[in-house]
Amino acid sequence: MMRSLHAPIGIDPRNTMLVVANLSQSGYTIDQVPAMQKRLLFAMQSIPGVQRVGSVNQYPPLVYTAAFRANIFKESATDLRPASAAARPFRYDISPDYFAAAGTAMLAGRDISWHDGKGTPAVAVVNRRFAVDMFQSIDAALGRYYKLQDGARVQIVGVVEDGKYLGLTDGEEPAVFLSSLQSPAMQISLVVRSPRDPQQLTTAIRGKLRGIDSGLLAQVDSWNNFLEVVLFPARMATMTLGVLGIMGAMLSITGIFGMAAWSVSRRMRELGIRIALGAQRREVLEAALGRALRLLAIGSLAGLGLGILASRVLASIVYQATSRDPLVLAGVVLAMALLGLIATWIPAQRALSLDPLVLLRDE
Image (cartoon, rainbow, N blue to C red; front, side, top):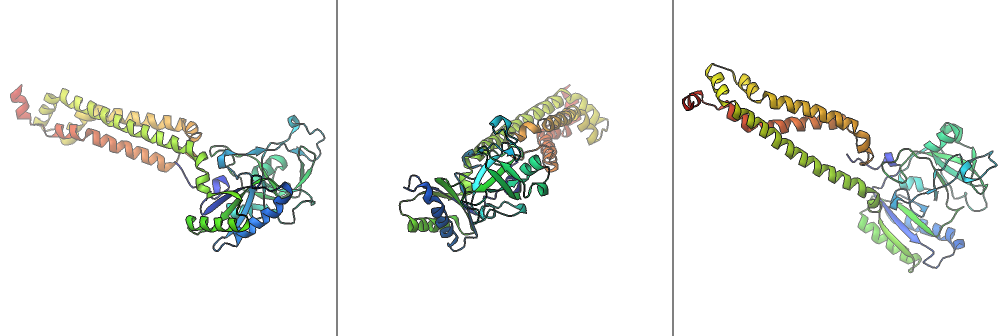
């Protein structure tokens, strides 16, 4: 089943807008990017109702499934060839307040600040997975250094929660977040958090963009809409499994009904004699439908077992899907019981309404 995209992926797309600005196609040079980035961030922050604003170079996690991996080396490493890398985490270059805007929780240390700009020592915030993989714990990672492939030393100043960066069904992956002020890019994504109506907020954002530069090329949309690409496979899988489930339920009802009706029709005379001899309703139903109900129970147990065994395959298709969820298991058992009752209702009524005098006279 699909759940909220909040904590499990390290971002919260609810009440959040993305503004993807292409500065290269708008006539800016790389040297002008830091100043323009600040202007855009401060302009978005000045919109009434906006709570937090941050930015990330290129695209944020999961959007268009775009992600860049960096070769990371131990501080003491001298061999900086890719094959000698100690880790290959996802890399993002972010502005101050990006984590607050994205709804990502800080676990330890500090965020990127406006003082982490060009000419200052390189710093980074890493996720929990990276801290544990490289330094065994969050506390041990704070203040430590690692090297990039160009030999630059980067100090870890903070640790954030793990998230999903490439796909919803991915496991825990390491990630590092560097200061975008130290690594400017020609395309940036502004993350604007606000409880305002998305349409009204979009209008306000476009007005601010025109006020800064009427020729600025920018795409404005909700973060949820940007996530459509990464959510499409999971949604299609969910729809497909739903259709298959409905077809399976229809086949189950047809099969159970057919077997129950056949069992009753084959044993009409026997059931009539049982009723004539004073058999109770429960005994008549057991004689008429016992085999069908036993097969239903055996098939349901087998289906539950196979579903549990296939949970890993299901989880690789649908985000956070699991057959071990007690609510899911209870729902499956209840659904099969209801299907069984529906399928055997008409044959059961036929068995209980038998008139032994009519049957014996026909014989």
